[in-house]
Image (cartoon, rainbow, N blue to C red; front, side):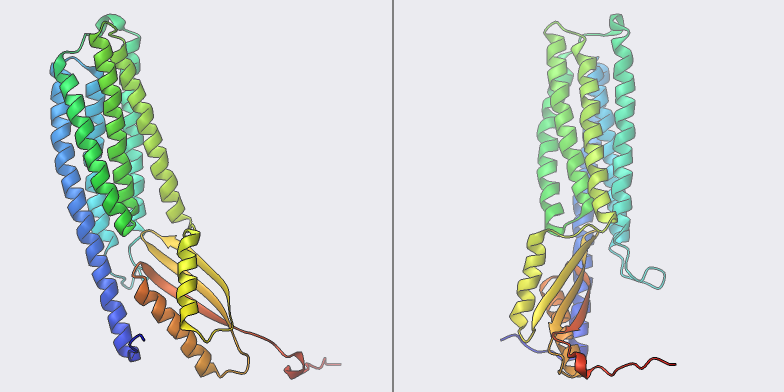
Length: 323
């Protein structure tokens, strides 16, 4: 049997839980983003040096991609701090949507990085005499980049799924895109060293398309958050099961959900016997509200609407028409 709390105590407990949830989200985003910034900064400097000293257009393009990751991680870090702020008078629904703005900035950064890489590598194809065969240095840098970026992807994605952070998911996709682009660099550089110099700028062009794809996926995922996309069916079914466990409800008429960045809005419609008092139906609606919030800290707000289970037409006073 669950412990019953007094209304004021329960409200305070839910408020404390929400504050802890926001603080934990902010802490995770900050930690993951700082690690991403540090690793990407080291990779950017290393790959840029390897590309210049080793005469590799593909590796220079890869370095530009890593530089965009540094900027993207910084944006996610700032966005995470702002989005975890509590509601205030100007923002009564909180600041979570700022995370979507941060995600869009990351997507835009990737898009323009891809355009720059495509333009630079494309020009090299029209001047094949200027293409130089890369040394072994950018080849080694590509291998190091692949291993490091895949590790960052796994690390970031694990925490993104844990707190359902759209900006961390965007950052994780960015890491995976960089790992794939480094694979393209490795193939292009190796091909150029085997006697096909044109493969180095071709690898740069392939990298740009990987980045374009990652940018598109970030925009798509962010649009789902901005457009209030419903939660997965299994999430709604979990809410339904929790409501059914409360008991004393004639029927659950409808459950609607919508994503609000990393949080969830829930609307529930239930049917109760028509002869129950207003106080009783209100108390049942409050039980549903408090139970769902207590069991699901990711829920930001719940609205519970009560419908009469049955209406007796003859009990409704007849409205006489005026002559």
